[in-house]
Image (tube, rainbow, N blue to C red; front, side, top):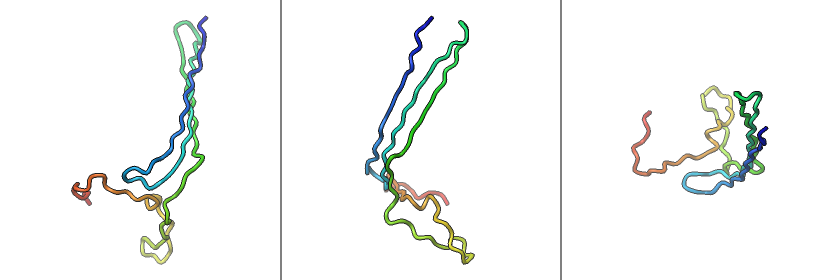
Length: 97
């Protein structure tokens, strides 16, 4: 009978203000693998991955809700408006419409 080992990995990631990022967060995650041998010729591998964000912050100042489609009703702020995306290559041609 083989000894079963439970490989476990854990990580903590902290965002950094580098280049175009305008968000801050801390991420904690862990992963485990387990091998099961139901017979001498068959085995299964299971994987468990868990993670969470104990801290996060939104763009400041927050975008203002507005009427995007002109129907007179204020529309919810789209998720893409919460982040500012800047080109990492200032001499790059503009995107195609």
